[in-house]
Image (cartoon, rainbow, N blue to C red; front, side, top):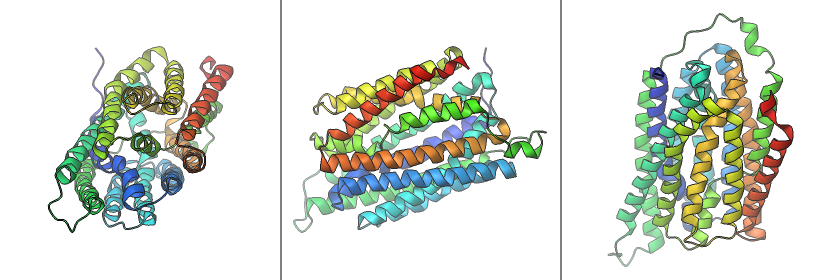
Length: 397
């Protein structure tokens, strides 16, 4: 019988649960709030999401390096879960898309500070044979919070906007804007629970490895893994465009929120089994399957109608379940303990740059070519990543 995962893994799972309840109450509404309420363009949305991801990239690299050097992870985790409260407060009072950008950047600074040290902490307190299971549990709790957050947002949105207008002086857009801002404020309050839970985390015992190891080079195989994951990330523009696509196909705001909940639910169900399976059959087969599914999903999104988008995004949730936690476990497999903060940090930095590029490209393709073009681009780019994976065959090492 496999031994239970450590208390810190479980605590981090609950921290991510409540943080994602908070975040996912906001995220599926943000494209509609930005484009419909604040009347920004899809290109502006692409810049908001791209700059937000690039911010994560830069800050994550710094936080990862610092946590390696001072040999402490927990303070960065706590600060990283505290800053999003301020980001959501800015969204609550936003009256133009640059304020949405500011709120997202503050939120993403928090993510950047916590992500590398948090993932390094998960790897530090887990045996290599259970690493996929640990990351799988964390992703399951994270996505469970996403499901709850999205459903709560849908319920609140229906509550605030689902009845006929009683005051003729208030327009439908004004009522929707008020509903969005109220939900953002509630989300900030929920995020406070995640911050309080971080107080239960303990710093792992330091190793006896020399300090110089914390500044040594990462092994060659780590860089091969990272390079392949980055090639795929070129295809992986912000999920905001999935929600914008649903709106373009005619789904109502509350339907879009439920759609987001659906693929988050599939992600929740699949993440833990995928992590356990990767411990047994290997990481790369799982990654390859997930990338193929992604390519198929994006090509289908370029041609789908309003009804078919529901099962297509269920497939998208399955792809996330298969690849997200497994990819992090794969990186941890090839990074020494004393360098894991830097390893995750440099990966998040590089993937943030590629996500910035892919999100801006997606926005430009949407505005200047067609709403279908970003998905053709993503599907083809993912197909290229699969071909490269077959050529390189990194599993041989």
